[in-house]
Length: 356
Image (cartoon, rainbow, N blue to C red; front, top):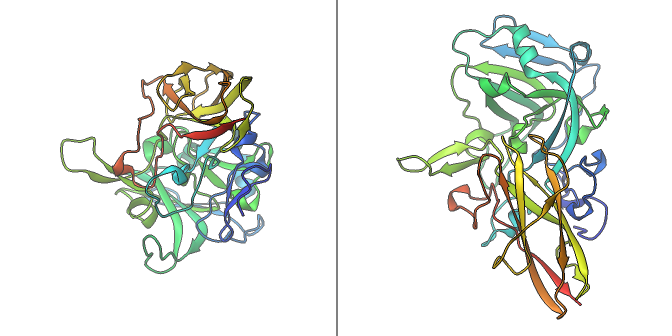
């Protein structure tokens, strides 16, 4: 059962495992590997390093078959990246929607070590007309809700070659240690700045295509209605994370002493920019005050923040909110955009506490 006031992981689903980082325990910039949120669509595949290989095919000059040792022999790269599930904070939506009922903790930050996807594609050689790299995981199964899969399928997502050749990492280590089975052993993708569904775990194949990938998790799931163009809304795959701030402490439904100072803390993140401002409201959004950012700006990594609140002397319930602005000028919207459906929940989340 969910344990919102314990330090252990919060279980949102037993099988397959979907586990939430207890966000109220946020203290360090890096999330311990054992508390990093877990998103699974199918059971964890049983893989071992001795038999595993990564195959690279499609619109390339030289098909590759790379072992884990081959990848580890290439020049490594280590990056720090915040990953957020596209459905994080889904439990705050009204009315309720289908999907894993994430609260605050389907987001975490880790240090990842591996090989740039660019280096693997350069070794394979791209043919003219190459457009996307499809990342194929070993996890597979059959879904019935909210959309039915055409039988058993693998988890697959694609990234445009521009992004693939920029900063996508093929990671074999997390926080200085080998990946655990739940986090994608022996190899997973890390797509900085994009929602977590793009960072495919248990990678077994990379397939380069000349046409947009139209797989289940690219179109029927992990997509939204883009209403920004002059025409009718178009179904579009999810990609870049949107700007967002979350309150870690006080926790949801926490009891706080009335008439005393309280240090409200949290973190904020965005996709392809830097967090430059966080504001806090202690009166349900009527007024806002600027919080202090405690981490230096670093693209693709959350910034922790805090705000010293002098709590009212009168006991009762209070609603706290936080909102962020990034260096591209984006600020969190006041409400959830209907076209986003059950994803990209970025409006300021109401954290209700009780003064006593």
